[in-house]
Length: 433
Image (tube, rainbow, N blue to C red; front, side, top):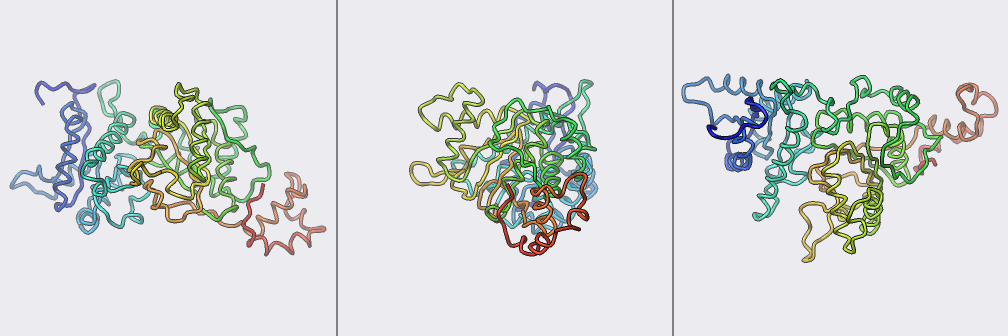
């Protein structure tokens, strides 16, 4: 706009808005809340209402969709029911997202079945709650969170380069301030050998802040594929620019905590802080946050009111980057969303940053993660060890299976007791320690 200062350069980031026409009211509200980004020249918002009469509308939509750096999906039952929105626009948007040439951000407008949709693995805004589920008074707060998340994504991953040109989204993972940790592509593949090789070559590299309360298990075994999946989801997904979350679910004692411990030790060199909090009850979570405030040496660490201490840790998580927060044994959503004084549930968790700048790893017995209110659709299930994995663990602990002693050698002599109990190991969920 004439007379309006342009931020950093004259070229705005092209934003495409995909929505169902029945949601026009919500598209208008979103545009209103994006007005500052538009007026300062940071973004150029386009939607199909801008098509001029007599124009080939299909070609116009395709041109703008294929030229956008940022694509917003306004998710509702109407959107999901629209063949054009879901079958054409969303499909093309996700193709560009996974190719690394655009970012796709789903915005949850109204209730619908979306947990198994193709975009379900992406970080959604505003958190795990539809905007229509917020009270009318809090609706503006919901849109403010959307704008806050988009601004962080733009500043971290789509800002202008030194020459005034746009930094293309193909550089997913190249910016530490985006929470990506500057990891080469060859180190983010689902390959457990890469994980172990990095671990062995950087034994002395530790985060500046570390409070994992458990020693590393020297007998950890049988979970290499799960570790690779956690690493891929947290550290190499295109959606991590908004902060990334992953949940590990399974029966009590099956090995969820052990998996989180091993991930922390193996990936420690890529974080500036690895923080551990017990989340099995509200009291223990509050106590853990008090410990974190002391560990981080926050000015509010000795505050008399617990909510001040918790807010201080939350603010640290919002302003810092490259951290990993592990919430262990988060089985009940009420722990993260305690009731306010009148008994009404909170819209936002007092414990979690509204827009995280790091990674959140949760261990839980819950299988329906929608109940946690975090926008997580798919947990990573931890199953019992296979018979051979269980027997291998026993042989390692008996010092019969070593680097110089193969499985065949270890089981060729005196192995009858071990092999005879292998079938029964699948029914024992207790995690090895």
